[in-house]
Length: 267
Image: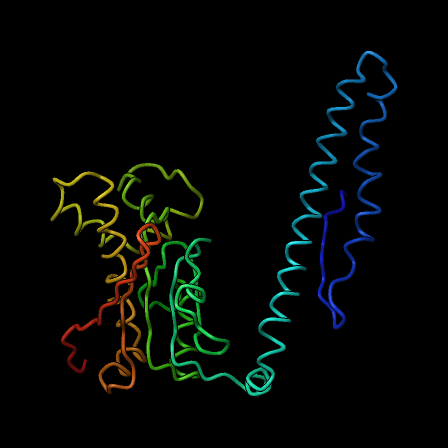
């Protein structure tokens, strides 16, 4: 079995990476031995060695990036927030739960400048919240349950964003027919109602504008789905929990927010 590069974080920092590389290089290079023995294939062997070396360098660079990132965090945040860290070691009490997209360009902690312990965050493709169903999507449901019933968050914000690949896929995939993906289509269909609304009301608009509208409407669908969770609905009715929508346009550098009011009445 071919070894892979692994980094571990211990009390004294990172360890294990250098040792693993010592064993990985000979195994990879050994595959070029038969080619190297044939003089007329020296150029092929050289190219293969170059490719392998480049692959290993990428792995090393990735580990260095993580190590340097942690060093910066420790010196610029951790060391300067010792009092806060000490407090957080005894528990957390965030005021916000944020549901955001897993897209690497839209980290809510950076966008909204949340401090440590300020927001309980769940991220997934297209910032979806599935309706309440015990046998459905326990990953999202467990996060909502924990945030509302145990952490007692006061605000849940669902944040959509511009250029969302998940919403683009939702608008692009046919409603019927064979699936083209193993997981993506089943997941993004949580926002199918948003697609139907946009197609019905804005069928005359260009596709890219429909996608933008769906990015925002999908937020509302997730907010509506949150209200199917009994403990969320109860919190909203009591006034101890507020639902909010957000939309981050990273192309224009704007962030829109809106309160979600659904004229709730006790069930």
